[in-house]
Image (tube, rainbow, N blue to C red; front, side, top):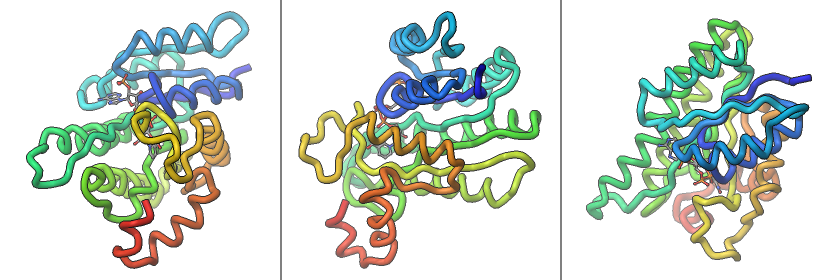
Length: 248
Ligand SMILES: NC(=O)c1ccc[n+]([C@@H]2O[C@H](COP(=O)([O-])OP(=O)(O)OC[C@H]3O[C@@H](n4cnc5c(N)ncnc54)[C@H](OP(=O)(O)O)[C@@H]3O)[C@@H](O)[C@H]2O)c1
């Protein structure tokens, strides 16, 4: 029997794809979206089928606001309800501010912040109507402080995502739980170019296992994997910027 329906954006790769696998293994039905539908279709074939979870896929570019509302609405209509929405689609392509790469920083801001805002609007419309649901926003450890160079815009968008989560949680909407997940370094397409020996990098399955465990517990906030990122989070909040700039 299904444990409920989980909608995941950015499910075609990396953490979203692996979350889909792990939620399917836990017995959830899945509503999966991203732009690369060939990858979503292959994932649905792997996870769905007779006796397995129900998996529905749709193309979605989260920067297309109208499409976000339409696709979320179509999923809700097809399944009858959505129990959890994971706002996961993200882009890590910033550049130092003032270096002439406005396009890269704008793209990152539109996907990671404005896109997350649209997804939150669409999710909460569904949750308010059905009087319940679990909103999960994927932030980043980089949200905790200002970050330099190519990370500046990305970190600012992720701080914005965390602020959306806290604001909605503070509203205490009837039946709605809100979680914000701050991943450390987890191997994915986003960091495939980064050297293997990056400090504290874990493989996708291990990192996502920690994410899924925190989501299942409906934790309000989680730094994942907890070791070493929970203590690093404490340090990042209190240490001077001159130290933080060398930590992450
Ligand atoms: N990996 C890490 O270490 C790490 C650490 C902290 C936070 N995060 C966050 O975790 C989330 C997942 O990242 P990841 O590491 O799994 O990255 P990834 O491997 O690059 O995957 C990103 C996903 O987002 C989707 N996406 C990108 N732009 C999109 C758009 N305009 N519309 C719809 N979907 C879009 C991609 O799908 P399509 O290209 O098919 O659309 C893909 O499925 C992101 O929010 C990221 O910021 C990751």
